[in-house]
Length: 156
Image (cartoon, rainbow, N blue to C red):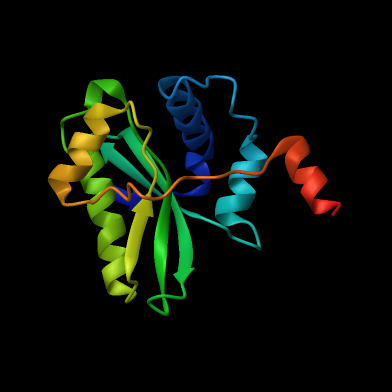
């Protein structure tokens, strides 16, 4: 079963984020607090949406996503920021259920796209996404400004 996250899910969402960071070989990268997660999901300036995959009262995984906009299509879309399913639950349909739910929301809202990143070495996820019909955007390279570089650019 896939459902919208509630404030009671915040500790589990933060733990899933930490588990995902460990899986992606960056266990120290998560600096968010429960308060940060709560503000992003449920605060007055709600930034993201979250879905939880449950089975028999246990949370198996989550997805965090937010709205984007394409000037090329003139329509919004979704960006999937995080998708994580517990290792013992992988292959059981939770990941597909989460992606299906987001795709259904995009369709229902008239959105044009649903996009995300995947690490080049993550062959199991790449295979899974391709089986769903997702296409890699091989000609695009991701760039990021953060830390000192972000501060330097912001100061002009």
